[in-house]
Length: 332
Length: 127
Length: 150
Image (cartoon, rainbow over all chains, first blue to last red; front, side, top):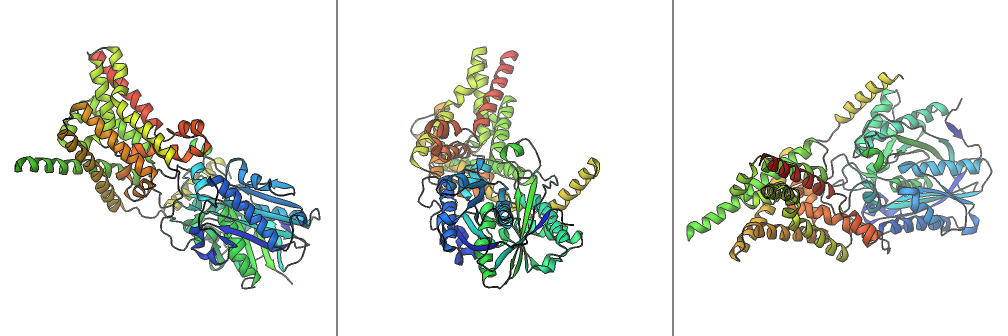
């Protein structure tokens, strides 16, 4: 019997998406698919936090607009971000006239909010919910790491926080792309303490949730055209393939990591992209487009998050991680 | 005249070699540990204090000039030197010597940083 | 899983992860650090020579050289150049006094958005504060030891 997995009987649909991404991200694979490619990552604001908030506001507004709806048609928004007290999401919600549920799953926020939105719609409580999240390189850097201008070297395991935001409108009908199931992950901690090696810290959580999902649903890994993880990076996605292989599941042929593909040239990003915006932007632009064109039909979207803070790592704690998976399929 | 120029040039070579070597040692430590800039700066400064406390660093300064004073261990050397000189005047001197010797550097850092912070703002990294 | 097993498992996992570590180019890194660090020291030496010609000497000379280098460090930080140098040079730009200036200046610039007092001024020493703290502490200890020894 399904333990951690919900199978949605009513199959809530993803109506539309709205995305915005920074200049560095748009040079990569998502550039062609985003609604707005920023030339300047300040987005005309005076601080990076304000820019992040504005990106999120834009993504939400654009998603609603793309669905052909108006603000009053939306019943609720579920959102979160990486900053302390999820200020970007809360401040973005200030501009909209519907209820707001703030969630925090670090970089897994996109799949967490998608799963929650689908669950609330499937249960019949709401009809249309916006699920959105975003992140900004510069605001994340200053909160989790060092001032931007500090001349420090980046270790080769490190990743680059994606500047961008993505929003989706989930509704009870009106499209072929359905959220068919969701698996809520548990917190997994394999004792990694290196804050620069997020991929290695998060890979076990991704492995755990993917295996749980496949076990609960009785599906094989090749049921999905793509098993998408959030921001494990090049190193982390190698580890997750190894870990699942060890448990007798082969995700090698259809596994893709958003962080690994988001940047074109891996130069100073080393392992690829990270951050809440990474999975949000890649899913809502690139993958959503592929789903819409039916180039891919079944996707397991498993975004991972590292639930650490600067305080916990300062006190020498290891990094607990989480992964929530949402299965998204093209249905008739 | 020519010998004088040669002397100056030789001093530059020594400064380059010694300063570069100190930085290379620091880089080696960074490679093998996960120390970030703050930690490196503190330990190298402490190394300067200890070496001058033992009376060794002075030789390096005499030998390499700026090659020994420009790296952060030179800052430690300055602190220790000030304290040692202060100690000759008494306990109060030992207490105030360190910071008064470093006052130029600290004041400069505070004042220039303040001015630069007023003028510039942080910019995102392009790569 | 018992506590002991868990620990073992984690240890194995960490060892496994470490086996993936990308290779560090020791020689290349150190050579860059050597070059850049040496170059900055040469700039210092240049100031020394020039100021000596102006008749400065002793503490005044050493202090003025530091002040000039710190000015350069903060200026390059403000212009957004220093972090680029640091990306490639590593310790070569961290260890010289300009690196100290950079670590004072960069948080000041970064946190200006939170106000001139609690932002710029309060955060100015988040990175470089420990250097002052341990510098004063260790310097004074050396001074007191010398005083005790006479």
